[in-house]
Length: 354
Image (cartoon, rainbow, N blue to C red; front, side):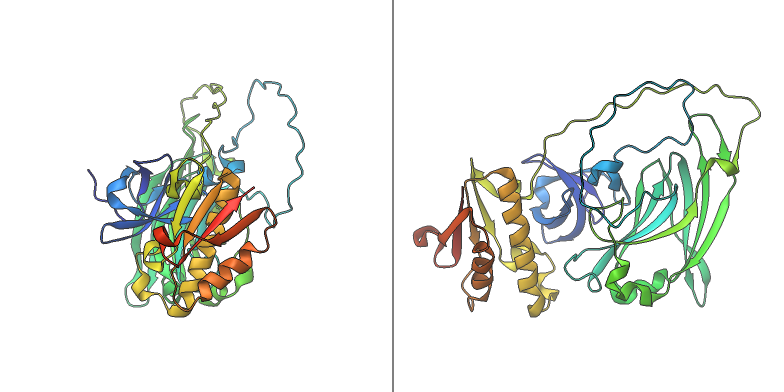
């Protein structure tokens, strides 16, 4: 069995669902699941389904699970009009087809601190071979990553601290695109760009985007389109591909990991249970992380329709308990009280729904 590493796409053994490993420490891994949440999981409960580096962000965002085709079909199949559903206006537009560099802060509560995942995204209908280079003032450009991406793929280039983002200040990308449908080969492109570190310390630069549910800094490196494609000498007939069948999957919830019996879950909010790197986290950040995870689990429990959840928050100075109760008091359709002292001691709160 492959050793679990940061960046691997993994599947859970004891329940349904999958995610991306963001850190591994002493038998535990922090897994970013498709709902955008990070959860701690024992390594023994995981199996690798896709090695580190290659992930598909569009599987985490419903409206972009299928890429648009670049060419018009010879025969169009009439379709029933889709019902118009009013959606909350988002600050995003359908992007041009191309290669994008996307920086996703791991801590969505504090966008300009902590670590960022860096992805190269192939938002096109073509296969792309690439070499991604970084710049060093002494060595010049050097190869950082190479790979082959199918349409809709993303390649995780790195996870970096904000104070080390300057290593991506000057980049070069060499790309070669190929249309697998008709054999068209694009001209090789070399694109260079400079990203000032000051752009990463402005929260307004992290926006809603069509690639991830999280806010992210998005930069288009190069555009991909049919205008620069070179058709092969031997004509290849275009065969209309059948429309892909939509894959129906059961909706998963963050709270699923903590369900101990039907309708009931237990969530331990102690920082060592949430983050494998808890020893390096500053004290003033710990409660922010705990509260953010509590809110995520509470909303997840409501969405799943659980009857009750026990949140184990510990005693301490009582600040975390007070903040949790203040949040719970804002919800009219739930009740909360101290959980069983015999089972949990005096550091837990039970929430009842409905």
